[in-house]
Length: 253
Image 1: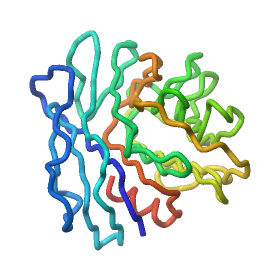
Image 2: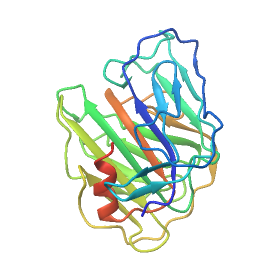
Image 3: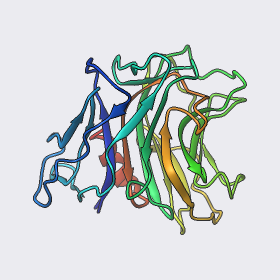
Image 4: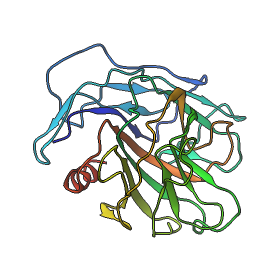
């Protein structure tokens, strides 16, 4: 049973004015139970946060997220591309970040990202393009520079050799659900694509990450290396989900 969903983002193609801050956060209602489809707070330009819900069909329960739900976007155009979701272009000017405090967990975590590739494929273009990054110490998910596979690091700053790579190379106009989970005990880390584990689970102990202030969706911390994908939804869980739970969570993404 999933004990807590710290943060979930549903990225919707809502076109509206935007001043650089995705203001909103949670509506202050605590306790009770909501279906996953209940919108807790809609962000102008279309980020929606979900919290404190029960999905009886999948047996998933989650508590209220206590973190700051405000996202911050910057870019040369001043407007995020929201065609079908949040589009992290390769123009090296799209930066979307959130506060890590009470939204992310250091010693164990499960990250699920639903995305669509907009290029012909994840080609070998010599650039490690970031799906997710964090400042100070890096919990990094990226397309590798010398291939099209996706590699996830529980703590790339302190344990650069501790990583898990997928075997799938994403293709153009195909939607995937990527899951990366990490823990301080067996299994130490694992990667799933569309609910199916790719490769073996990790066997190496890694250092719990010392978070900085922010984490980044679709760029590295200096605002470059965008992957040119559309993010449809992202969820962060505060523990290492089981394979069955990952399958169930894939069904609600």
